Image (tube, rainbow, N blue to C red; front, top):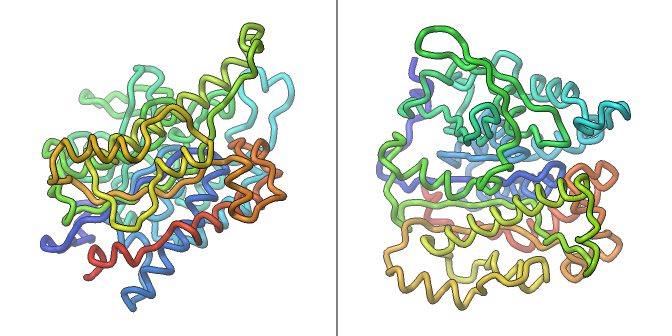
Length: 387
């Protein structure tokens, strides 16, 4: 049976996309936003539905892949949030000291929990997935990015449909230095499986998967071929918090290799985050009154030297008035100034911004709840959910 045949989407209604960033335990920030989105849409529409019934495509990288897969499996937003609260500390239990030379954490606890939540035998092509998903991982063996989707019209679906969902999510979240690579046997045309090692999809330009989700939805060759029009396509992008990594003057010269590695990984994710958001801002239309993600990062002091909202608006207007998507991003600059504005004076921005800071889980949740309360205003998107 066609994997998506049980999910009819009325042709006449607008399409809706969710894209969720990577960021380890900071996935609690988008998780809290998902709770607000789910609750507000239920109130606005007067009907109680799961997120898999609200959104036609859910894309995720790393921790975002966990959330995307959970949504597709019909989990409530609260269940997704509770995954981090219940299992976060267990997943980020340090390896024995000698093993930490290769990776800080064992993959076993994460794999066990993914099997428990997603099902050990659930495949990418399973009818148990109740909406279309897109999961980003990097094939380290071949040195390229892979986009796993259950869209049956995608040219790679026949090859990938039998892969286990939990393995794909594990591959997407295999952050170098944190977890070991994930090994997956991929079927080939001659019937002999090819062994590949995958690492975190965040080690690419797609830690923020919003642009790739837009392309997956609109480029005809990818199979969905949805209309690229601001009144027919909505994309909500959920971030996991942002901060620039600074090195005091005179210190960088004396950095050893082991210090540069985490710096480069973090900054790669930062730059990808900024780039993807700016590109989406240029081709997209933000609803009147909706919060600007660019202004958020600049005003909070989390990002410096990037084009401000005035510049982006001017460039966007020069590209024409026919925008391709209605686009909104929810995010926060993880700085002292910003946390104080949210009334979180007791939260240390340096400690809480680390993706594996298991001792900061409660504070990450508090930040997520504050961001959701401040930024998630689904009433401005009412027309996209009229069905």
